[in-house]
Image 1 (cartoon, rainbow, N blue to C red):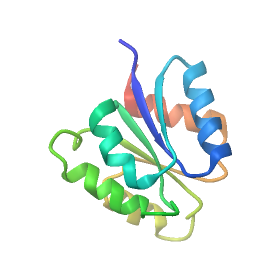
Image 2 (tube, rainbow, N blue to C red):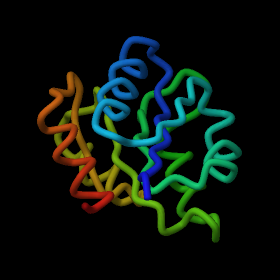
Image 3 (cartoon, one colour):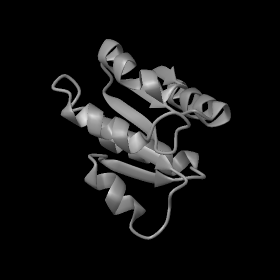
Image 4 (tube, one colour):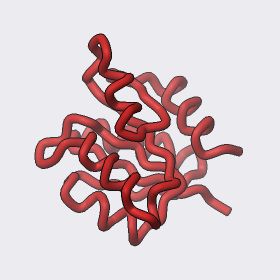
Length: 122
């Protein structure tokens, strides 16, 4: 069965890059540009993984992660946080909200795909 990945990223180029790489690797992908619709889209798409930008224009990715983790239907879906926040303590803060994975931007394809595969399994 094809693994499903929800990509929440408001930067058009980053979103397209993530989606193109994931589709080329055989994943079913649902892109989301508007963080405000991310939870609703996750409920309808039922992803195996959420790739979450932390610094969204309309809502905090941290708040979205907390919302995902408090939703009974989505709580077990792993989250890979991708962010420009790469300062001291940022990874711990992001993981403490419930993200199982963390990558700082700019993201290289190799580490991105390794993190994705680690979180969704074979």
